[in-house]
Length: 160
Image (cartoon, rainbow, N blue to C red):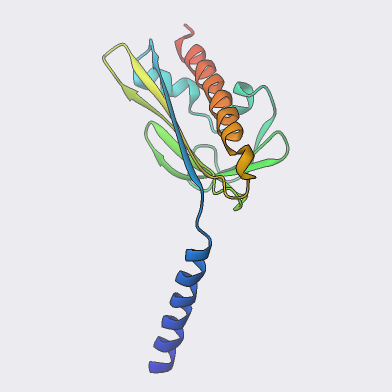
């Protein structure tokens, strides 16, 4: 039993030592927009996990699991794979399967009043694998892309 405990302790120590050398260059981008629709109505119009295909004007398919449930995997544009890692009644969080950028995103809707709500899109990723001189441009490009996604989500939610 002591041998197993010693092996477990040594493994944990090695894991911690490795993580100290793998420090990331983490970035968060949080964007939001007000929607002229109640939260439940707005969410019903944008909650599909592959709705992002239409928002980005590309393809999207569910390749594993069930749409909207933890563990569902989507493939965007035939190359980007993302898995749902958390859900609430009015949100989902996904992670890119590519471990190099440790990419996570959350789409949520929050009520503001009986007739309005807001979408909040949060992106979190590691830029360590991106050349230092390209990181700001990468962040700006992603912020612009998801600002357009939010605009399309808003238009979709407000359609009668």
